[in-house]
Length: 553
Image 1 (cartoon, helix red, strand yellow):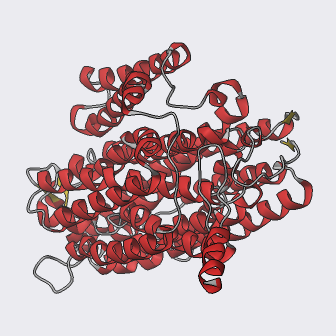
Image 2 (image 1 turned 180 degrees about the horizontal axis):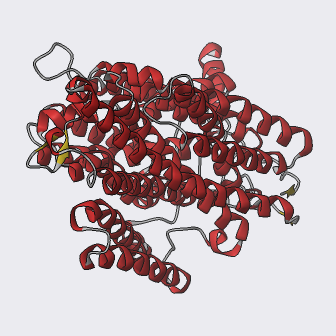
């Protein structure tokens, strides 16, 4: 009997109930298991966003994609991932974090299976959209759960695993895509890249289910489906996604219809007008806004979201079009392109680790997030320099083809973790789920818009100069797979130069975006003010923890 009592007391010590507005106190060993199982789950969703970067030329050849459809293989995934972000935060308040996470994993696995069996581009795009819906729930749920199960003062330390996972997926995605990029007749085809998600997803679910089974992640005590329908900002979500979709669609069709075509200009201009109108609507609506109130009341938060947007514009464009550069202009196979991407992707992964350690050390030593702001500024300065150097790459580049991407990757990697830490410091605990969804809504929108803009810029530069003999599908797409075997050599060199200079234009667009973000971050550093950490304003009813000191930004 005594042993049973001791076991019961131990379980109560290890796990405690979470109610909205409080923190979960969990034994350190259990937090370790939870963090790493959550990281494995996050790895699935984030890797799938980049796994097609090196396999897209092969997919385009197998399924006879047009150039517009080429970009949409990536866009379809990120667009639905973006659209469902705000919904998951609110629904998790109703049905619980774990149920949303498990359902999202199932939807993601289903989408991956459909991608692997797709026989044409319509099936592939629909399957990618389904997988994106699941991925959106995985990303939001994992970050929210991790933020809730640890104390505020330990949040930066334990979320390092997620930031490192995010950057490691940038390494694994292109490598796996290159490995599984043979034709369908070979033993290893691009379809295996999607099949691989199924056993990994099963393992991640088993580990996560085991580690979370004794942890009750609570629901909002005052939440109901009736109040959700009555108060959720469906209008704001519709305006935000409609505006973003119009912009993405306008850029995607620019090469086909022309940049000055009325339909192209109408879509892009109307998209921006709708987004502005959505912003005005958000300040006036009586429903619960997509973004917590602190987003609009604190200029620091607005700057962080702008930085996050431009960071992901550059990172996603860099991942996809560096892979294309290595294959189309540098003569590499898909697998070789994956390895040549390592300085960019591995550089970002390795840079995120010391950056996360430094931020945690600075916060513990000074109880200030000024060190985090320094990381943001330095990361933007280095990444701006890196993308500026990328403009110098051409078809004759050798060692610089790996060195310059390394500089860009280091700068971008420093930004995987820091902006989220600054953003959540302005949120109350009850706004954490909605705030996390809003943050990733901006992050994924930047990635989606970045890929659409990069595709439009590349198409505009390449298709007016490319020789007709390497076009396929009636001149609507480039045969990237067979460029290396072009004859005579003069034709091959001409094509390589056209492709290299077209991709240079992508870097010429990304570099100013990062430079603008750098100047915004400098403004964030120069303006000194004391702010109270909003998430500490509410009492910790679960553990009786004391409020921390105010933080200096």
